[in-house]
Length: 319
Image (cartoon, rainbow, N blue to C red; front, side, top):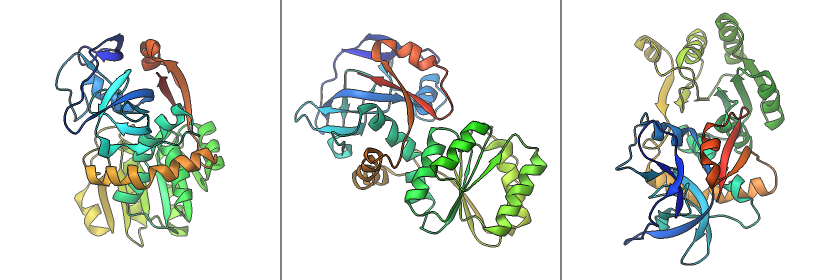
């Protein structure tokens, strides 16, 4: 079969041949329709992610949409083998039905974006209707999805931050109530966050940035934090490290935790895919949520892997 094949860490996956995987007990074969190229895929291929490959060469791609060979059922699943391929192995218990009415490419983009947004809200933040949310670094794929998911989940107020002015304006169209530009000075950003805390204190923060912008947020919370706020760190686009004074977490009602593969358990992930993903697919069919993507063929995987995409856009391989 053909696949996007990685031969060593740090290389670009190549359009190449691999043996067609053979299902063992508890596995089923899926014929892929589409799979997106995500930051997770690129981190794994670079060798910089905390999950590792067992061997090389190997097909890349952690998830995708396709049809079970045994039944023809259209499903989304995370792969036991790489999903940027003609065929892959999946656990039948982890398969979520995909409506025929949704385009395969959009169905391939949504689940990972929702895992980094909606699932984080539900399982890591315990988000409730009527709460106020800050999405810190909201102009990427997951950040945009977080705005839409929070609105669907009944958020009272949604504040977003980001560097791209055009993207920030677009987030207002998706449901954001207030936008803070990270191109402002640190002093201006802290002042704006402090003002928000005084007017409508935060309940939850989804943080895709870490680094200095998270320090600015903590400085604002240190000034005014009248009720508990949960910070859920999801990404590190602004830096992998911060210097965090321990006294801040002791003197203010701030909780800090992460969201990702590992912190969201396999049972929670299965629960989300079975109970929530179908609802989100239906919202997409009704055009109540959306995502931007650019499609490529599998034999153009090298081009897709290296493509310069617009903010909030994702490359999708249609197979």
